[in-house]
Length: 132
Image 1 (cartoon, rainbow, N blue to C red):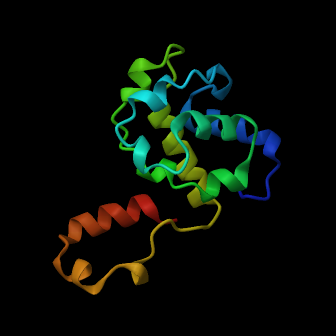
Image 2: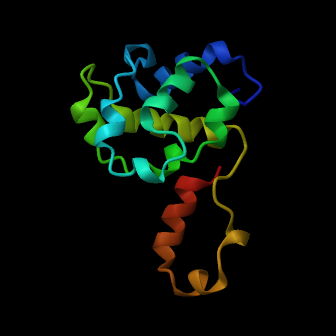
């Protein structure tokens, strides 16, 4: 149903259905990026990611690390003059990514010491969030 092959025209509607947010309310002011504590670690800031979603650039969205780096702290949502809940949009983008059949994290890429020392519940939580 939702894959990277879907028409780019439907992406804003898919994000809206999953997040309850209207991407077209974003006026690209950049306030979200200015207040995001994780922006330095993102390959695309929140403003640019929302723009990519608005114009339906699915492949760029699916290859972006930004939705996974988002801490969902809501600093962006508090400052947004349009009241967009950016963390919910990021969650929707993660869900679209996972529904495309891709995994963001792979068990075989984790260092052995991490697997041995990490609390099992942390691994379970991470893989529930990061894998399809």
